[in-house]
Length: 634
Image (cartoon, rainbow, N blue to C red; front, side, top):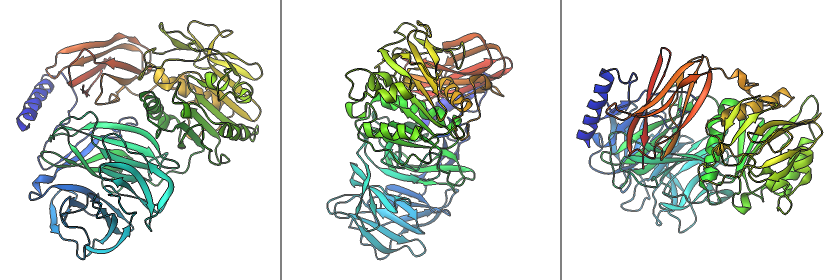
């Protein structure tokens, strides 16, 4: 593997030396420890690898498994031994192996995952004979006490939740559910996450990142790959909601059939200015990897915007994940502070009093229990809208291909004419408004005259954008479909009343080829312009989205199979070319070669006809050029 990496490095160096690519590429520069410099813009920060350390260079006599940062040093655990190692931030061995004095760990067992909280080290051992959470004083490395968990469980991972004052852990090794237990070992009601494909290996609590708190999970990737690992994120502010996931290539190590995931930790004080995940991966060699999550700072205030998405704990689908990821990709840049919660048709919403805006994102034709808000939740939202005043309006933004199909169509179990016609100002007309031939939305009252292309083959298929008619009385057509007029079948409707504003978009986020950001921004801007209050929003119209500088962003997702989105911005009109090259510098695809007006763009690249491997995409416009690397993994 070392020879292969060296050859690839030589090839890349040759390409850079011949001016084929202008940017520095990420390579392992030290077999012991590496800092990786990468971009730090909004959509690229999460999962960037900032450091990776060679564990085998320090610990050669046993297999490590867990890692935690205390604020002064790392602690590495051995999975089958009562042994810990202290390692400095610059990756030198301070001391070890250290035996925990007074330990009641079973023989041939060590900590699989650890947490550093309340000034102590906590650990679990993943054995049915060790259904305990162990508390260790790191000044003397002496066991202080244990928290006894229910009999028969085999806790493998561990994270302390300060809001619930309890510990999250799995109920069986490699699987089972994740459950939060209080400090007496009693399960906390409603704090449970069903098992995910690839198992639970390490978990970390994140109470800092906006929109949280979150629980991060490390797991094995599905499907497997020799140099990849996987991370998953859940929002745990209420009932846990699965948000997003990533498969990440770890430089300089391999495993069979993949890198085995290990312990996980979240810290704000490892790298100045960064919030990070610290993960352990088992391979040849073992690595401790530091991933960027965001910028460090005090916990964000609870947002005045509530975001509701379909509960992902009920058999997550490709469609639901794609919708959720598309919304999550753009929302942080448009809304300053928000709280995200999952729902199904039985959900009772939290107290809505403190919220000024609700963004409701639904996935068309989802599983029956997730298809729409229940009657009780709809009643809560309707009553909340009516509490708005001319000086403090309430705002509802609804996004989903089946809004009218669910809430207005005769025969639907969610039919609610007050919700759809009085507040939403729409009636259901047809179950595929734009058709399947070059479908698009065209701006009318907002984003005027701009065409926003849709795809009739979105991720997971299931393409059914509602076509609706408008109900008179304070309403206006926000978008029409390309094959209809404003008097016919429309794609988005707005309603402005003295105490509230409602906008309804009849398409799923994943339907958009590249323009969902523009549609979302224009819709939020329209709400704000009509008296709605959304914290942090500073772009009242799409026309204000002219970027200050040229930029080429990292493709998303990455790695990908078979399609990914490449985003770029140009501050002035001009000829734009976007091309893809293989590792030898051979052009394999010309994506764009045309004059573009100033603005931010996305291109959906499909690699179906290419083989797995590393590719580079290059943007040129005027005197600007930039190149980035992407991974096609089939």
